[in-house]
Image (tube, rainbow, N blue to C red; front, side, top):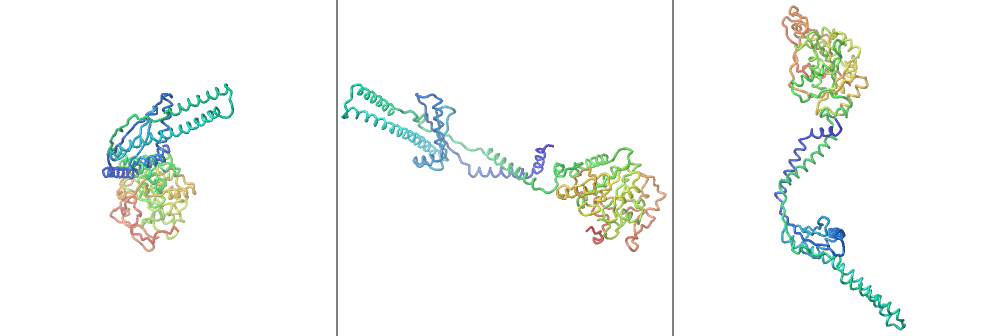
Amino acid sequence: MSPLQQHTVRVLRRWPVIVVLALVGAATSAAWFFTTATTSYTATAALSTQSSERGPEQDAVLALGYVDYFNQESYQELLRREAGIPANVTLAAMTGATSPILYITATGSDEQAARTAATAATDTFRNDVRESLIEDRRRTAEDIQAEIDRNSAELVGPEVLQDVQVNIVLDQIRSLQGRLTDVLADNTNHLKPLQSEPGVASSRESPLVATATGAAGGALLGVLIALLLVATDSRVRSGVDVPARLGVEVLADIARVAPAERARVVRNLANSLRRGVGAERTVVAVVAPHGSAAARRLARELASAASARRRQAVLVRTDLTTPDIRPGFLDALADRAEARDALLAGSDGVLVLPVGRKTGDGAWSLVAPEQVSEILDEIAGGSPLAVLDAPPLLEAPESQVVCAAADRVLLVLEGDTTSWADAREALRLLGQVDAHVTGVVLDKPHFDSPREVLHPRNAVQDTYGDTTADNAGDRYASTEMNGDPSTRSAVPTPRPQPWATVPVGAASENHNQSQADVPDHG
């Protein structure tokens, strides 16, 4: 996608702003039109610079010069004062194509005022030009007459002239007198009236044009505001901006897709993450900058999509900020329980290792890449895909270690919630541990997610594994607290019950855990 297309998508994403401002502009323009619109009248008079002593093209050039002179603001101020033309009447001059004809127009809200102004402006302008030409010719005639007088004085002076000299002086006088006659009779460059009575035309702006103009102006203002919002927006809105701003690929944008389409996209994503048929398992870490219900749900969906009848995918909850009452990941790290014994099974065949029980302050110090790999080797030897539900990168230091142990890392960004600064910081932290960031998934938290029902692994019917009902007596149905939390044990019960159900993507798997028991990540 080109930069122009990207900017277009960003602007169109804020189409409500553009539409609202376009409607406001249209309504404002329409209201202004119906309250202030009046009929305007334009009176037009015509003058000509045509002369029999010049070519038409020279007359047209002269007409252009007169038009430019008439339209000067300084001259129009003098013209209004001299002709008594009111300020609410607009004066203008123009030529008729390349002809020697020029038109003088007067536009106002009153027909008679426009007609009078056009007549007065035309007559005054023509007289001003005429008087200027006459004054110039008068000065020329005076100069010629002074020269004639000097020659005449030579004839009557005391000095006696020879006949030849007298004839020369007389020829000069006759020549000068001929020039004087031509100058006094010359009317070149004078403006001649072509239309003594100005014609008047009325006009009124169309309400549709006014409304459309207002709508276009409002829409343009909306586009400018949308561009400003794009430039100042600090939140991730869509996948269009991610490659340019973060430098990573968007693998999927499932923030606003229908459930059926979402399931298909997640299946395709799970297929693309696996290394190939017959290959060893692929470990994928799903992580978000901050605690994200969307990331937890995506991790569960990826594991479910990758599960097969004979090869179940494994989901490992590693978010130490949400400890559980059930044995799991933390217990395996602290050597308090075997990871395989702590596995639970979902109805879709996914094997889930809970986050485990609280170990005390500094639980994150237990996490190391080799330990994570050992746990995965223990519980996911034959699984096609192992999904790590990683802690939030900007809240838990162990998240870097968990992600470093994965083959691929999916960074989940919540649309309209995650900031660009947090996304860049998350990528920086992943880069510090050389985690392989496969790409970004855009999603939103879904509070109507289905509830997750987990059973002890040997209590699940032989749908995804080889268990039978004969060993149902070993099901874990409840837990009892025996002294210190680190010595909690699961007590068998003859009646099979599922583990406590929690919504997929919930913030914690233990809703009875007090906030004070959360490990310190400071």
